[in-house]
Length: 292
Ligand code: FPP
Ligand code: MG
Image (tube, rainbow, N blue to C red; front, side, top):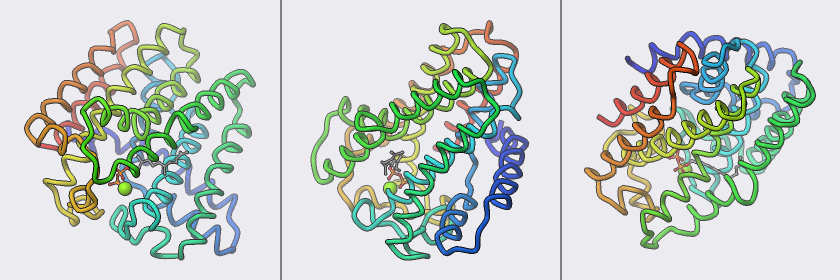
């Protein structure tokens, strides 16, 4: 099934929640404008959608994940604002629009990113989850984002420019800079549904493999797709000497690797997780269609 058809209902649910949040929190300040601009830019909202699907597949309700899904989308948006800055990837186009710093200037973009981290924390603390659930989500979030997680992945990504990395090293970058956030989505949805440790572990494992496949596909599309289709600059990994899977393995092997990771993800979804597991499977398979 096409990824848009599969996710549109949940995406709309999330976008409506986001717009209500922005209307309630809104101020006329310049920093709020930059903050809201990047959050509204959108995309497929894969992370909040995954969080909903993880919760539903264990018998929970998609609506219950919205505050936590918003927090994860804020962390993701923050990471993209900073990733696009001149000191990192130096990109001027994201989701078909000027990047935050291209539109508002570098200092405002840095501050909008900073604000997103702390708004993410309060989205969770203000949610109606039991205190232990909030603490578990915050603990997992801090771990995946911190100096061994996203920050380390991004650091390695930036410092590896111009170097020849092995596939193991590329995988490590992908795990930290991308897959760990997918793990957070799966953990959060499963935790809100009060899944047991075994269920949570296999759903987090699904997040790992799906995130690895996602980043591989992203890097394949940087070579094979266009600025018009993706809404962001293409061909820049090669231009910047990025250490990607395409550089390590070539296009054909990279596609095979992405398929392999997707299969491993799907294999971690046993039927005992409930009938809703089919949506997670379909989402994983539809991601592969993007690279076809
Ligand atoms: C996009 O990858 C960037 C990331 C997946 C992660 C960016 C991470 C940071 C800026 C570290 C700080 C983050 C947190 C949450 C603490 P890409 O450049 O390969 O993709 P692109 O083509 O979409 O830019
Ligand atoms: Mg980038």
